[in-house]
Structures are given as structure tokens and as C-alpha cells.
Image (cartoon, rainbow, N blue to C red; front, top):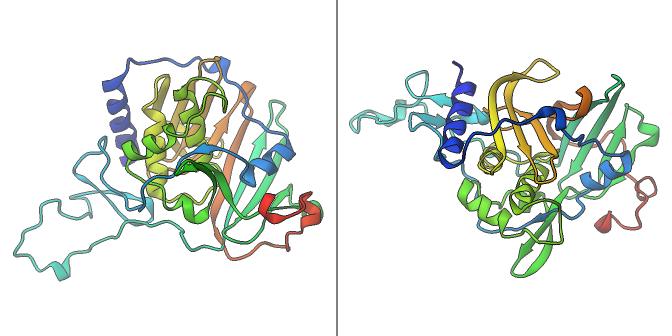
Length: 314
């Protein structure tokens, strides 16, 4: 069994302890495909109901992780005793000789977050989407490498958070202020649920809001891990380790059936929490081909191409 499988199995054990097992009927999967303009607007950060509470993003040992697993750099979980740190070091040992690997803080200072997605419909037609989310500067959305028709979008933002009774648009820096302890993070998200916003039960809305914090965002490995934990702990959610995405990468399958019978189906990397793929009806899927920090966009975003009147509202 791989470390990734151990991660997923630990997660499943925690979930099974608090709810009965559920078999999800994937034939009822509802496609998460969006029209191009809707994708642009979501990427630009239209209202997602979240709430900001607490600060800091250091990765702490989660309740569902083995105490023999310690976090290593770049989102890798290293098992003590296998090229890892000793969980109970000898106090007399010369600590200067111990290889201390810091927790991966993510990308709090990167100028842009660049993602490449390939969406395949039921007929096998593939559309390629590249997105540059700006930290403080406008970003860019490009379909099928067509820079001539690229769309400008406002600086990266991933939802509205309820802070001191006021809704605030959350950008890159605020994303890095979210708590990464799963219980605290769930309290933050659930505290933002509103009866007239979103669909389904409160649990369904928690899953949907957590998903939006993972999709095309520069969330740190610590935050990603916490988000998957929150999502998997909800009723009607399940995690199955040892699956492959369309690119052949091994991951874990997350499924959540909402009150209306729709289903979120996603593949994620259980080591660093990357969202690898979303799946829809009849084999349709959107696969993350590449993601990471970037220094600039290939062309300058323009308000004219965005269809907006000001970057602040785009």
C-alpha cells in the first residue's frame, strides 16, 4: 500500500466512524460543465458564500492522520523511519545533524496562479482552457491557445466571506488567512451558509463552497488537505483510494450526492491535495493538466476583452 492509499484509508476510517457507509450511484452524476462565460465569471471570483475566521496556515497533524506521519516539503507526507524525521528523537542527539523539513507554505507571494484544464465532453471533443489568476493584477482566460480572443478577468478572488457581519470579497491574501485545521475550517464555511444562497442542504452547501476554494486557486497544500477533510466528513460523501484520472495519475475518488440527487465526482491527489479531475455524465470530464505559480501573463489583459467596466467589479 502506498502512502497515498494510507492517507485515503485513514480518511475513510474517520468518516466511517461518524456516519454509515454510502454507495454512490455514479449513473446519476450531474455534469459540472459550465458555459464559457460562466467559467470566466466564476474564475473572476463571483460570490461564493464563505466566512473568514482565524489566521495562519501552518499544516498541523490532522485527526485522521497517523501520528507516525509528519509533513515534508512540497506537500509530500513523509513516514517516520523511511527517510523521515524520528517522531521521538533522543534529546542528547546533536540536532544540528537532523534533517528538519519545513512545512510547505504554498505560494503566498506569487504574482499569478496558472492552471491548464482540458474538458472532454461525452462525444470526446476536447476544449483546452488556460487561466492566469492574478494576485493583485488582472488575470487572463484563454481557450484552445487562442490568444487573439483571450478574456481579461479581475484579480483572483474566490468568494464572499462574512466578516464581522459584512460580506467581503476574498482575494489571494485572504485565502491564505483561512484556518487549516479541519474543525475550525468547517466552522468558518458552515457559519456562512445562508438559506437563500446555493442549493441543497447545509451539508451540500459546505461541500460546494469547499470545492470552489480548490478549483483553480493557489490554496496551500495545508488548506487543500483541510478542505478535502471537511468535504469528506459530510453526510453522503465517500472517498475511494487507488483510482486513476484521465491522465493516468493515481489519486482518490471523492463523491458526494446532494439532496436533489446530483453528485460531485472528483479525483484528487491525497498527498498534496491537488484537484486532478472533475467528472460528469457519460464520461464527460475536466482534467487539470498543469498548475503552478507564474510570473506574468502571455499578453496584457484588457478591460475591453473582459466585458467589464472596471477591474474591481470584473
